[in-house]
Length: 336
Image (tube, rainbow, N blue to C red; front, side):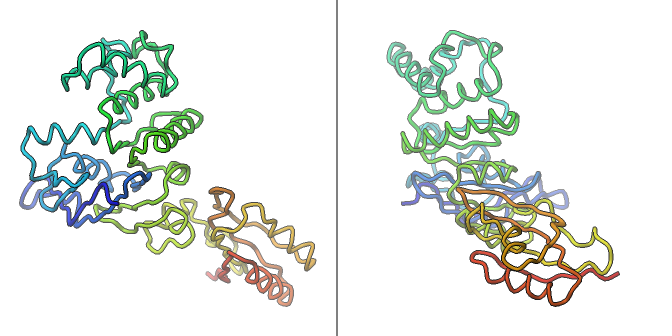
């Protein structure tokens, strides 16, 4: 069942010759209870798109339907009520520095008119849920970046939202803290059933927790689908730039280099392809470059292998590689 539907959405800033077309004909269908990723390079329109989902930015045209409500047609009062079910966390946390962590979490409930005792009880429950029960009386200035983001997540959950929008929520965090925040989001998704929309420029974030992804490029959706499928068979230049950022290329090697570009499409991550070549065929190849990653024990990415000078050995190696499951191979040779 769809929780968010974006249909033919356009967003333009300015008019005439100065107009900037930030988003063009965006169509997305996000399912209830999933973790959906939106990724793109800087300037792709990611943050503009997520702000259009809760109408912090009003689209120039098109529709945004959240939980059955067409957001662009709501009155200001109706929109305020609808936003309680579509909350957001940010890269910069946006905590109120003069309030304790507990009072930060209470804040949206105060605005909604929840009685103080009830709000405090719920806020304490949420602080415990995000692993910061002992920080209720601390101030944001006393917390680490990861702890601040946990407080921001607790605050975003205070109104029992159906959708949690995460705009570059881990970009300011170190890798270890990023992993802990992503694990928390995944846990909350499973425990509460909240739909999570992750906006990021980091492919590692997408592969860690998302089930489906949309790739945004120059204000348009270049590609969308299951994460595993996008990693296996990126069909657009935008997807390939993100999936294979290293751009393994033969051009950096001497002219006449005979090589094979191997694409790993979801086989066992620990399948010893290079070692098997040497053991089974007695043929040695050189690893010229690699850009691979492990997703749930499956290997995705590309590897550039230098083939032997002997034509027969090269042919045997190429045939062997092509016979392996979940692997495709393209012969390449560099000439000046």
